[in-house]
Length: 282
Image (spheres, rainbow, N blue to C red):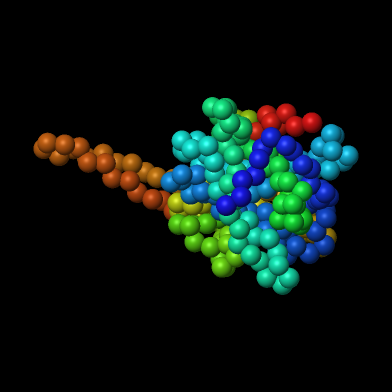
């Protein structure tokens, strides 16, 4: 099992993508599938995805940032996590496991958002590993912010697509994630500096944590207009399931019952942007 060192940053020669880059929205689904990976941290299983960030130090090239839920990384006492890559070999994909360094000399190499369940880690593949990353990843511009939510009239009932590994299950032998969907189930959605999480009509399983939730559709922005635009934005990441806890008292002890509502908790993408900025990449 190969170790990716975090000491030497090698930029990736990939161009940034924006929401206007997709003539076919199916391209966005494929890009997100290929940018999403299973991550194992000790006994903690989750989902992570890559986001490109431009660099001023590497001749206009980009950094690849691993994004996941903070509790996925914080729950391990080890120094490494394992991610499962899928290098392409002809017309097929090969499954490869890699160790990613999380901690060096007692210092975490990843950054957690101070208030939200988001973590970010710069992944620096060596030049020999670049083959695993030579396809498009979403960019920092693909993360939704408050302006996008207002301008594109995002509201409760809108559908978002979610990628992940529920109970560790994969969509193929190569290790690609499973694509599901749910509707935004809470209100209001802005401002995200006050609204820390959204609710989704989406059943969360162990292994979904950290997975991206994104909007990918044709949308009419003016009522009655025949004109529509392609809309692609990452709306956030899956944090946890929503549970109702009930405590009943017995003669000798109390009993705690937890009820799963089939509702997921999503952290807004603005919190992902804030976390990546904490890395202070140059």
